[in-house]
Amino acid sequence: MGPTFRASMNWLHTWSGVVLGSLLFAIFWMGTLSVFDKEIDRWMMPASRLALPPDFSYETMRPAYLAALAAKSPSVLLLVPNQRNPVITALWRGPDGSFAQHLFDPGTGAELPDQGTLGGSRFIYPFHYSLNLKVLGLGYWVVGLCGMMMMVLCVSGVVIHRKIFVDFFTFRPERKIRRATLDLHNVAGVLGLPFHVVISVSGLVILFSLYFPSSIWAVYRQDARLFGREAYGSYVRPPAKRAADLISLDAIVAKAKSVWGQGEPNYLYVFNPGDSASYVQLNRASADVVSNISYVAYVDGTTGELLSASRPEKPAALTQRFIAGLHFIQFEHWTLRWLYFVLGLAGCVLIATGLLFWVESRRDRHRRLGRSGARVVEAVTVASVTGILIATLAFMVTNRALPAGASVLGVERGAIEVSVFHLAWLLTLLHAWASTGRAWIGQCWMISGLASLAVLLNAVTTGDHLIKTIATPQLWSVAGVDATLLIAAFIAIRVALRLARGARPDAASLQGADQR
Image (cartoon, rainbow, N blue to C red):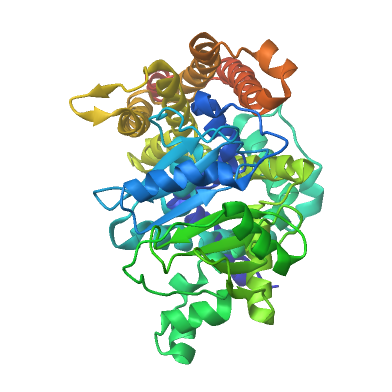
């Protein structure tokens, strides 16, 4: 491997990281949190902190179906409660055409109060794969570009590090910031290398139909329905315009299970509700398999007749669903889920230390030459790393601080939380630009304060303090979020103190030293 090739890889690795590193950090951070999006939902939605009844009947979901029918929605998605999300979740289109989420008690079927928040599954999780940029699907394309560049960074990183596995066992935190940062970058990179490659590739595979539509067009001539039938076993029929009641949901599930042999559904998707041509799509839960989608069945809503059933059989579909399952990790395996979380944090550390090393290695030279490049990158890096952590914590603090049904100038509670997130993120950028050299310290202290405040507010507003939640099995997810917040606060304090001890002289002192 010649020096020219290695130099080219070094250039590619450096500038790919500098240009897209901030976006990559945001995507990895939100993806890491999404591993526990349902647990974050329960923390942010106190009414959902219920116990799953041992003898759950699918007929308990009928009030949710009737509510959607009353709203004249053309379809309603009913998510079956499980251990991670023990409430009945119903989604149907409102008068404005957008999907509205409603929660129902799994024991009684009664509708729970509106929680007034998007929570983890409707804000943090979509942010991970779309940046919540919906115009022209721009967010999907930006995330796809970042996913490809993450693969480039992994490959070029291996090429430019001649002693990559030796570097894995070399971490010297007592050395100067620049050397310690590079050591940490190498350790995080080698530790999570297989994970980073798999998670980047699988993210692209999940949205292959968006990124590579020509492969579908070449075979199906843009016939999306034919592709859906062959790839996913989809079934569609129009309404008959004649009113009819939906038969027992337990009977519908029993018909689907007679095809599967075993396993419960994870959702019931009712189309044409209240019509004689209504039908229900059921998907077998993948809690015991890696693959994201296993069996799909369509059952007539008025007769209980099996309309269609399929299972993935074609190699391409099987491969795509297995890879998607690796990314989504919806199967029940708590050890692996925590491993994903830790490796996701390792990815965040990898990206952050790469950006920080670039800044540290160029700060003095850019200052002497009168360039602002290092300062700009440092400000963006601070806002991208500690800034998005502060924004996320501000989002959670706002959730616990606002009373139910709160609104400001007509802006509803959920929109206020999102606005606070973006405003806090912007303020961290302004703070980073104004506080050259000490922004990291100040924002670490802010992380510590907000994380502690979130735990305190949860205890005050719900009564579910950490001692109570640890002692109550149905509240362990809430305890996990609180405990993670306290650990984050502790780490932020340690980092702030470490940075304060090794703080660089301020700009005035450096200028005076140069003059001497």
